[in-house]
Length: 234
Image (cartoon, rainbow, N blue to C red; front, top):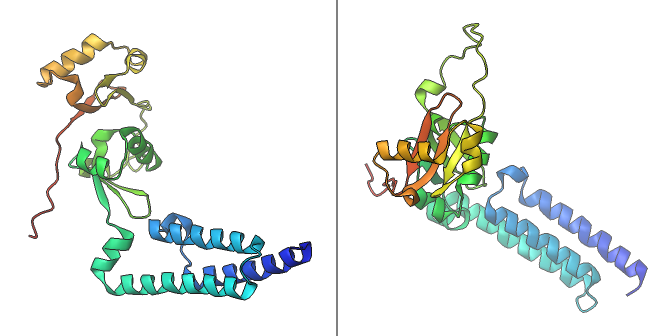
């Protein structure tokens, strides 16, 4: 295959891909579902392969791209009209926290770790688990956070109140593992933490999903076996 042929095939296929991308979707990357992402990657991969493939004619290559894009478009249209089909291709939002508790069944379902959840919360300017009423992993991969009622009302700035920064909280225990360095940075030790757990009736460290200590010595502890029931239709 000559350079000129590669150039001509590349230009034609790129133009076709650009046109199909415009027709298929105008969503931002952050709004794409997993199906949208896979379809886009597949179209790009097909274009790159066809550019250098001498065994497939240019006409057949363009036809293949259009056919695949047409199938994706048909599925998108059907998903708009059919709720059950939409659940198959776009999945459903998953509740990660409810009533201030981490739901390990939801976390396991989407293979989400406590560390990843904490990162997503910080992106929403939430640094304390105790401030969260619920957190939901959306179908586009983002996490929506609802703060507790008392945490989202009038601000100190609205009342012209000047207060010192409380400081960042520290994760002192995660998935049954004590983090001594974090405890030390807060002026505490492992014996203090175990005593706090004992006061709350927790004797087995492996029962703790996450424990977070604030700069004001408020200890948030979340244990396993938190559940949320969606079986009721009421």
